[in-house]
Length: 72
Image (tube, rainbow, N blue to C red; front, side):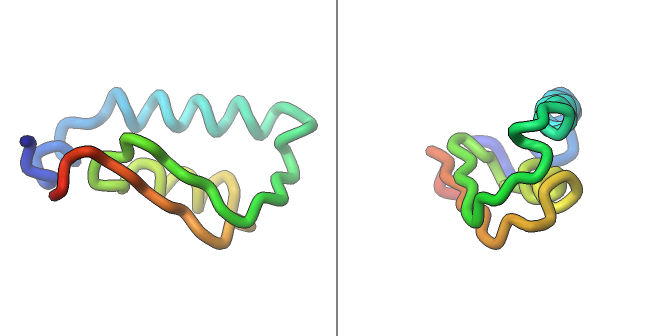
C-alpha cells in the first residue's frame, strides 16, 4: 500500500476534483445551507483532502467520518 505522506504529496488531482465538487454543491440552492451534522467520505485515503474542503465549504458539519481500505 502507499505511504500516506507520499500520497498527500502527489494527490493534486484528487484535491482539485474535491474542490470542484464542493464548490458546485455550494452553488446549488438545495446544498448551499447544508444542515447535515455528519458526512462520510468512503475511500478517503489519509483524509487530508476531505477534511480541508469540508471545513472550507461546509463549516457547520460537526463530524467527518473517513473510511479507506488501506489501514495506514
